Image 1 (cartoon, rainbow, N blue to C red):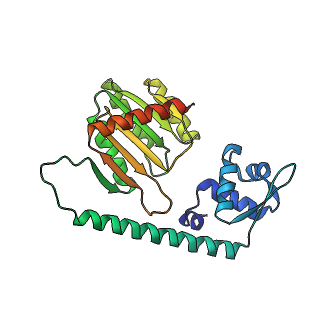
Image 2: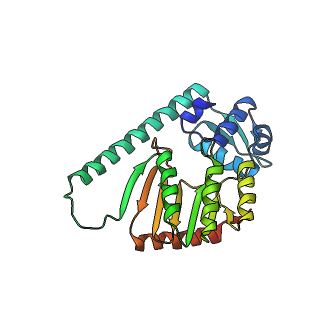
Image 3: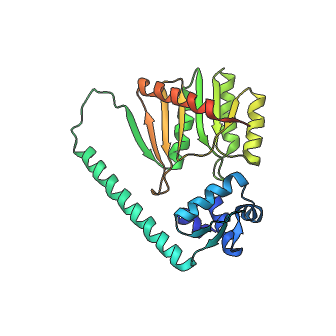
Length: 250
């Protein structure tokens, strides 16, 4: 349901919520089977729905069951809390940006970071950083949505490999698209691993340039923080290596 997506629910949360509404007093296993949400994903989705007060969990010795709360009241309460969080985020962002605006501009000093907004800008930064890479290129937190051209990404990755750039990618989804992508990457000796999605993604080129993208449900657009300082980027590279060691093989 697109309306639920607009309210900030994830795809798995929407499927699980619809299953609970249709089949009250269902177990997580039943909800997973009915909604086709993987068992490993259905529990986090149900926990999130419970935290949002959209459903109630009934503790049982054999297996917990789930039931939707009064739909109108629950969605009204959730919408109000969502609006409140957005308002608070807006006020905090406004205060911070006004503080930045009032700071004196220091000339001839290195600016360590740049901030931009939106998915389109994130894709442009990927293309720019790929052009800058000469030794290594590392990405964590990617999943291919319907708007992402997977073949354009593969074209860029292939070009990096032609230039003998070492590429490592940590993907955050397991589906047909990522399976195809991983198989194509294997052909050009690109290592891919899997890690559960976080509210951020990172990208590093040559340990000199890096980008952190924050994907917070409380704000309307993702926030891209481009790191221009080499020392900071080396720290991000170290962070990526620790995430790589934690990630699973496909």
